[in-house]
Image 1 (spheres, rainbow, N blue to C red):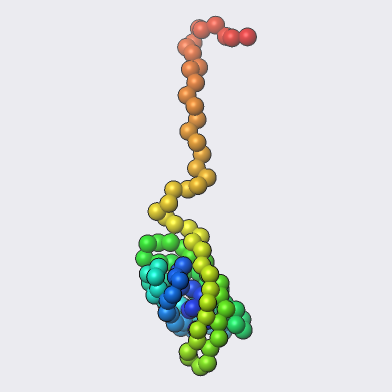
Image 2 (cartoon, rainbow, N blue to C red; image 1 turned 45 degrees about the vertical axis):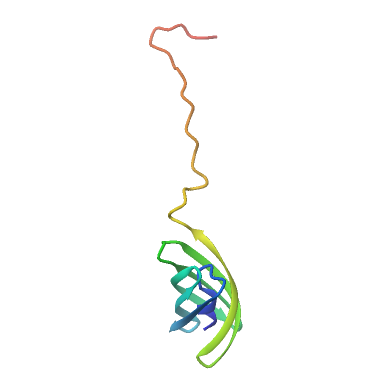
Length: 110
């Protein structure tokens, strides 16, 4: 459950659950103020981390801490958008300035 709590994509408040895939790894489904999300999560003791994707295609990384008893748990976490396909790349190269290179036979400047 902790992994599901941590993988709610950028949500302030949300609810989710995890489906165990292997020891320590869960398929997490959550819904919160950021909308629904689907991801993979892992945890060790009260700590959890996960990565998810929401319907807008945003890739979100999350980490959190929580407690649980049986199938029910509660946790708090922090999320950050790792990739947003709707946003332009921040490191795009600027356009090269246009220079007049002249014509064949023009004199060469010293």
